[in-house]
Length: 140
Image (tube, rainbow, N blue to C red; front, side, top):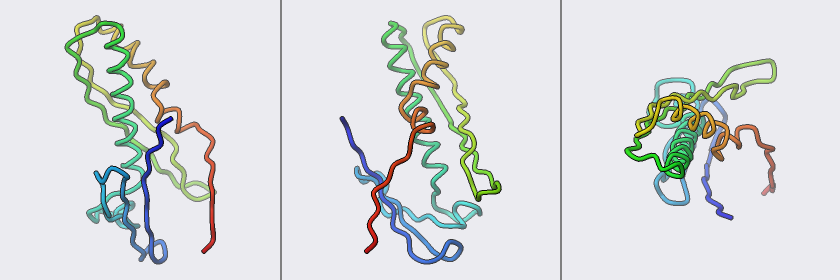
């Protein structure tokens, strides 16, 4: 089992507060995020684009693995995952993850698309988007 971590630190209220996001690897370190990076044009990141990046990367890796397993060579995959955040009666919800991918490989188009469909539902991040969410919380 592999466990990787991401962390966030937040100070203040929702609209005027600010936060920093970091990853265990250090690829992201104290990257700013906040209300205006999520809902406005302020430089920084937000949870939805990070989920999108993780989803696009996971899908592309899963598809590459499936294509390699089928002996398909000359593989190149470019993927964007569009994460939709919508306001509803209960507040905000992530309602959709839409993958847009371009695939090159030495195989028939219908075969590549069949593998892409399998990767769409089979990659771990796609599965996570339908997963049970658990939590350990401590008040300090």
